[in-house]
Length: 104
Image 1 (tube, helix red, strand yellow):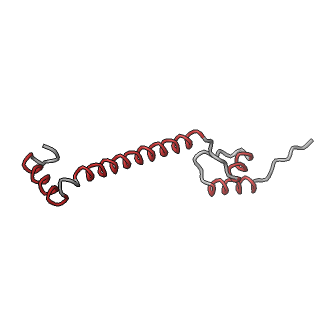
Image 2 (tube, rainbow, N blue to C red):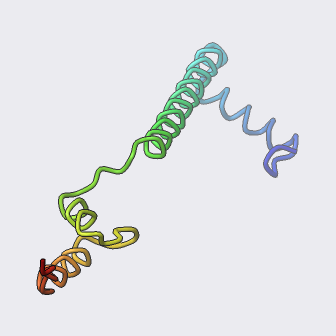
Image 3 (tube, rainbow, N blue to C red):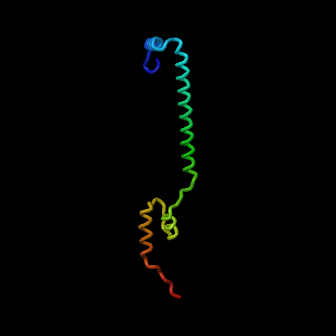
């Protein structure tokens, strides 16, 4: 049984298809369906390959740092897991702190 269809149902469906399209059109119809399925599978493989390449490029390329992240790093602020807004707040706090002046 294919997909819940028994042999009787399949013969009935085949008879209806032959009545609608005629015996001469069946090979042409089968060829076009086969080429359609082939094109679909080809497009599916290409999209899967494209997705894999994109994921690979994301893993390989280092993340580009924003100016805010670069500034925070220069000030000694840990940037891991923080948004730019959070980093800006920390940069402002660091700028507000009075700098320690060493006396000679």
